[in-house]
Image 1 (cartoon, rainbow over the protein chains, first blue to last red):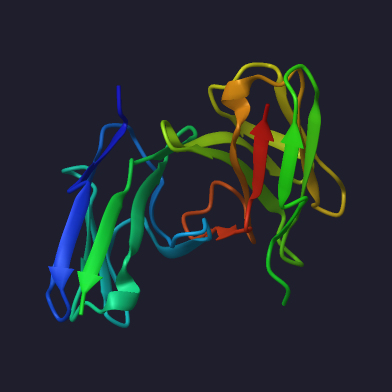
Image 2: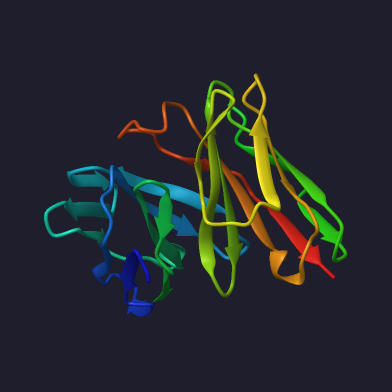
Amino acid sequence: KNEVEQSPQNLTAQEGEFITINCSYSVGISALHWLQQHPGGGIVSLFMLSSGKKKHGRLIATINIQEKHSSLHITASHPRDSAVYICAVRGNQFYFGTGTSLTVIP
Amino acid sequence: KAGVTQTPRYLIKTRGQQVTLSCSPISGHRSVSWYQQTPGQGLQFLFEYFSETQRNKGNFPGRFSGRQFSNSRSEMNVSTLELGDSALYLCASSPGHPDSTDNEQFFGPGTRLTVL
């Protein structure tokens, strides 16, 4: 049973494209995190959300608590955005999605 | 401020041995969480500590244990190592209480453990 489902698993985009990654979860949560992992392993927290919408530069994250769904949007994608994006939720423990591998082609 | 540090960065052990991994959180951070990452299972939650108390534990056997010290530094221990314990072990620290809805996590670089 996967408490967190992400889609798509893999995504290839041309530079400049608008990208959306989706996350659905099945448990009650207090917060949802979007993480970025580059090759080599380092993980960076992009967003922590408990409601609504947040924006950092070209990245936008939204969450709908009633529908148990979150989206991560990247506007004007760039090759440096190539990474794995992971959705994580905090319920009684942390649950992770399997990640979305994004490749942005120049 | 220095980031989260983990030692050692790489470790090779043999089956049946035990291992201790160390995590130093960002100065002032009181919450520390540990995660295991493998190609097959992805990221999985191990445990979470706040003010020297284990707050939550993931679904791992009792061979996996941890503790947090008064200076917020944390260690995790794996006894009787199995081949399947080969993984990247990540530590993350956060400044506030675990139940806070505004408690961003900052990840360390990880310790890559190989069990032969």
